[in-house]
Image (cartoon, rainbow, N blue to C red):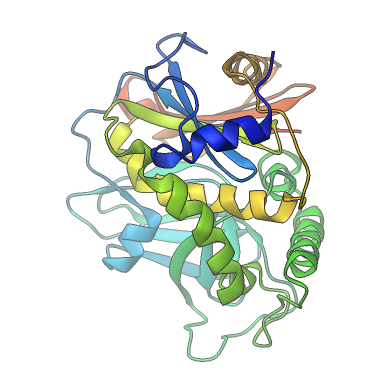
Length: 339
C-alpha cells in the first residue's frame, strides 16, 4: 500500500532531507542504477539515482561556471533560433544542458540541445528558442551582442516538452506566458518585470518567488552530500512522477544539481495545492516510469562531432539522451519528462 503524505511528512521531518525510505540503494530501475530515498519537502519528493561513473576524472565546466569564469562567450547572431558559443579555455570542456537559459543579447534564449563543447572550440552553433517576446535590442546596460549569465533552467514539464519534444517557437512563447500566469496566481501579484514583462528569466529572478523556492532547496539540497555514487534524481510532485535527470558523471551531476533542484522546486511551488493530501509514489512507480520513458521509436540528432542526441517519445513520457562520440558513446546526460 502507498504511504499517505501526512504519515510520510511526520516521519520525514525527523530526519535530514525528510528521508522516509531506507537510505540504502534499492533494486535497480535500469542496468547499473539503483534508487534511494525519497527525500521530501511539502509536495516535492526526490529519489536519488545511483550508478557507475563513466567519465571519471573528466574536467567539465557547466555553462554557468564557464560564463562566470569568462571561459566561454555566447554570441548573439541576430537569428532567434541560433546562437554561437566559443569555448576559449585550453583546459576544460563545456557542458550545455537543454533547458539552460542565457540572459542578455537581443532576447533571452533557452538552449535546445545537450552539447559538449571542446577546448579552444572556435565559434560553435547553438540551437535555441526565445523565452522573451517583443524585445530585440539591448536591455539596460546588457550587451546586445553577447549573453552574460546562465543561472536558470526551464521550470515545468510543459515548457520542457515544448523545447525538448515539440520544438516550436510559438508553443515555447505560449508556455512561457502560461508559466508566468501560474506563478502570478500563486503569489497573488504580477511576476512580469517592468524591464521586459515577457522575459521568463526576469520572472524567475523575482525576490518573493526566489524565497519560496529557497524553502524547498534548503530542505533538500544536502541529501546528496554523503553519497558519492549519485548520478541523478527523479522527482514526484503531488504524488505523481514528473521527471528525472541522470548523468554519466557524478561530478557533472553535482555541478548541475543546484540548478536542476531549483527548477523542480519552482514547479512544485507552482503546482502546490494548500490543504490537499496525496499519496507518496512508491519506488516501483519511479522505476516503471524510467523504464517506460526509455521506450518508443528513437529519433537521432547529430548536434556536433562530439554529441549525439536521441529522443524517444512514449505515451506517458519523453526521454532525451546525449552521448559522447569522443568517449565510445558514453552517456553524458539523459532527461525524462512526463507528459
